[in-house]
Length: 388
Image (cartoon, rainbow, N blue to C red; front, side, top):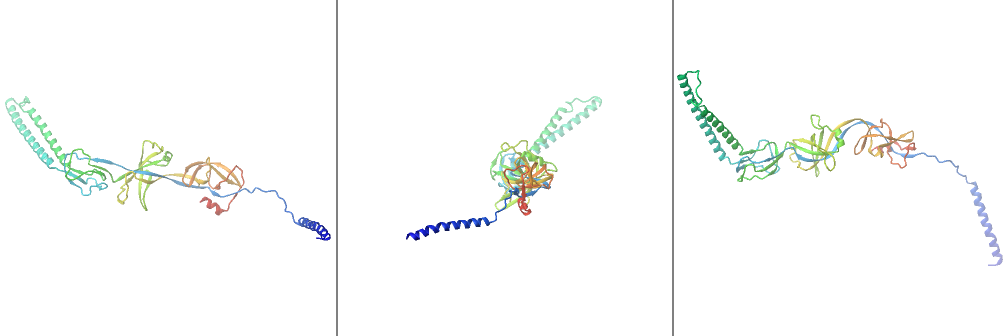
């Protein structure tokens, strides 16, 4: 490169750079500058729900255990060979009260009854003979000595007659016992029952007092239901006004339902959970649902209908803050309100003190909340979605 061209290049480069810088400064000066304004605190955007005044009825849900209302151990009162067994006698079978279960050979007991009856006849005859002899002796005494002087007791056979009367009473008692023993050869269901266990076989010799059957009442079952002690305030136990309970048994895709009543309260709390033990009775559990697998020890769902709360203010449980505090919105600002919770359900909080109803309650979770904090309420559809 010649010296002349180098000189021209060195001269033009600074001129071009200076011109560009000047143009940029001129353009920047013509650009309008934004006006500066102080930032405003519009408040956090929150979703709200409306506290509603309503009346609620308490429903208490629990898991109950099926148990028998009555149980009996059946044993023959007489010994003998089992001669007949009811065809349907088996574990799980149902029997009506008084229905025959099995029989014991009654041959010996029939003979014993006949002998006892014969002894009664003999005792009656002996007593009649003595009374006739006594009457004859009394007449002879009166003929000889007159009616004013009573005859000696030995003369009129008083001791012998007393002994004969006692013998007749004993014979009649023996006949009654023999009759009862004969009746006891037929063993029947003591009440409407279901067979829990059985060990009866035709042709087997059984001794008196040997337990052969265990039965439970089939016309009534009990559901032992643990509930928190605090829930007892809502439940009427026993009597005409006893609380109604819905019982549900689920097995696979099927379910069975019954209605029961809270019959009684056990005398002590459950040791582990410290819960009260309610007994719900179900009458005629198999009347319409004999196929229901309602077995002792089975768990069932129990819903007890407690009393009404009276007017309370209802809000979603999720809006209740720690310490039973609600965040109310008044004139665009938060006011913290402590309330008294009458009852908590899975989804709701029932307030009986601290709210009148109609208040706007913050449903959005916020951090650093304080009294007087500004908030903006979201649109109504958003608020309704928060309530749901």
